[in-house]
Length: 359
Image 1 (spheres, rainbow, N blue to C red):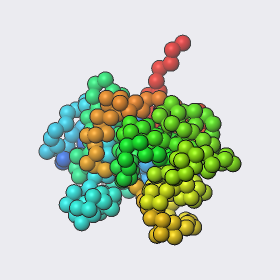
Image 2 (cartoon, rainbow, N blue to C red):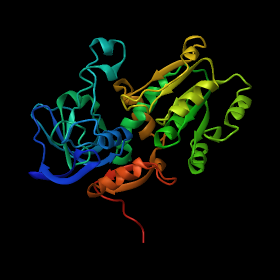
Image 3 (cartoon, rainbow, N blue to C red):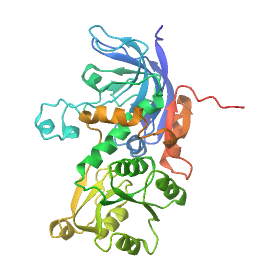
Image 4 (tube, rainbow, N blue to C red):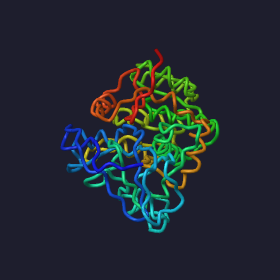
């Protein structure tokens, strides 16, 4: 197919300043790919970067990306034109000190962004085309014929959740609190259930608690209910939670979970990604009660095959999670919706073409 010289892209120009602009289509180098974007998920990490201007402009964000390979650089092997693919914008070297400790997100190469639509590389999914650099080609996942690019775009977020789940030391039947039942919280709820753990879901929205039950939660409680602690004490027979995952950036949720955790249990932070925001906690609970405080960030390259099997086999069927789709020119609306959760809004996608609706 003919590649145009220019394309539309949503360019970040400063705090809460997104502009639909015409920019050059990225030129690829030997060993690289050019992918026409079909779908890109709206991620809370990008929302925070846009809202708080944590990175200097201009940039083109969007990293949960899937599309069609439309151009291959010289010496690029293992791909074909017209193939649909899911992309990962960070790939570790697998050889450095951090990688040898399996701390892949701390690898210097991993911290480089290998997909761009122009300007400083930032994922580029909110554009018509992206350039996929050679060092992230191992993160290109082929999408099977029966699956959609929407499912492909969910590879990266599912990977981050599975990585976090695997950080916990749990026994089958253990009771785990998942605080926050947005798209990520629901993925935690489902993956924990699939692995044989019992999930207590909490949220402030009744509609999301109902969804949590559908996604496998054994119990679902309003997070600010006066009897929340009493309920958890009863269902754990006063033993306390085995683990808690904080899938919302709430210090109150962290403190609440810490008080309800058994000695030797684990708390995992997944949404506290804004730097410079101090929080108070009971350090004696960590030291004396041995309540571990963990963090998990980004994806694990070594889990790609497992994630693909989960998503593409639909053992983890992510399709019901995608509630809203916006075209590229409406990316700002998509991000605003994701930044201000509504009962009926879960995973939001920016897509090339809106789905056809029956009349």
